[in-house]
Image (cartoon, rainbow over all chains, first blue to last red; front, top):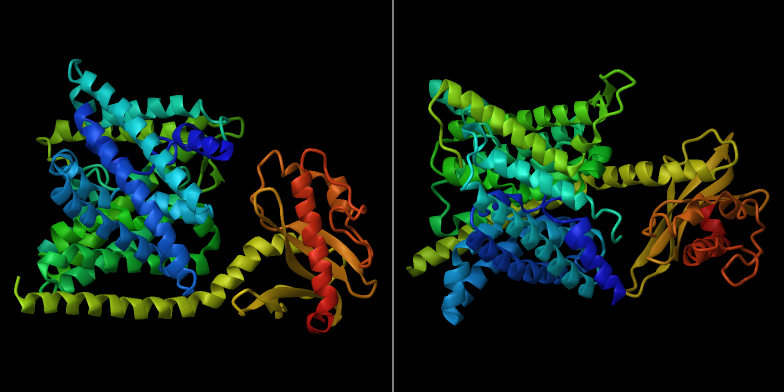
Length: 192
Length: 204
Length: 196
């Protein structure tokens, strides 16, 4: 149990998936303009990340390894993720229309979110067990949400201030993210 | 002929990724702490982009539009696997340094973006020119950013000492926060130049 | 959606994946040997160089051979590469890898055996996943690493045998190394004819 806790703390703070490992940056600058869309994206990412990691882990260990096709990992994982997102979209639309309306527009964006694919690959590279895979996927998604929501809250405030024309938009967001990353490096040494 | 030149050169300045099209940012920040790894990943991206653009454009009339995304993904993922195997076989130290970023070329939005926005509609020779231009533009951006980070952060360029020996290196630039700040400042400079010289183009 | 469209979609997808699958396996076969060579030169060669304490004049990596040391649970043969060090064409020492469970998983140890003296040569670590700064202090402890040097092959080196002093604070890691060395000695004794 302590191992899992340590793993979660490391993944959320010391090795934050966005700010320290640079995975999942496209939505980070794209949807962080308002708090509401940041929350929607976070929920969708959490859901898909855990599901995709679990399925990829099983595909790798019970399909690719016995068949000695480990080198097809990249192709297999991206297909798993792409079809999973499609499936989730269809199921949500039928079963929970309210949830679909809230998350729907973020789901297609997730297919090309490198965090989902990156975490699935990291789980294999670090030889995580099945439980560890679930915990790690959950923790990285929480770390992602944390950074995304903080940045969105800061950027909402930018709307009130005067930003020089050449700095507005992406440059300001990136420099803010840089300063946030500086804060998160303070967590290094905490955890593994 | 002039269209080929146009499609090729637009990737070098007018629509240079990742500055004009803010796509595929993750590797831009992750591999630019040294020039050699930036160049290595850039070459991988050029190869994958060329393969995917060429194939998508060649078979554009045969791919049903309903399943085009899965087909594109299979093409891209396979090209990436070839890069992965080749790098492990012939450039092992680079393979070790780049690690997870080689398979991650698959989810680089730039590649799927070019297949979807350009190669799917245009003739083969134009798609090749576009892929080569965009790929070279992307690699150039990576190398420029990596040069700034490596020279300021470690005082070396391509592993060669360029700053005086006494220069200890501003280590922040080698670390993740420096990557964000450096890219942010570069984007600001490019915005500044375009604001001066032309009416602001569309940013993605 | 008409039936014709569906058939066309399935056909296109099958052809695309079929062609790429074939191409990928061709590339895989073409690069397999080279990848193995790269892995050996980049991961195993430095350890081998450190563990070879005798003088030799050949390239042990190039002269390597593969032996079968048993079968796994599915009946597939387990293979191990053996690196012979030769002086004037005569094998003076052999190096190979053995594994022992540490705190976080298997520790790979490259050990060399001096053929003439019939003793251990030296050892070096190839791969491990121990905690940096905790388990790894065992690898940096010269007294610990050097105690395996030139030990007789008949000494029981396994943990609990009383012949190996573990490093305080890194007991699991020390035990893992000792287990790997003992396993290596047993492999050597059992497959001596194949190895030489």
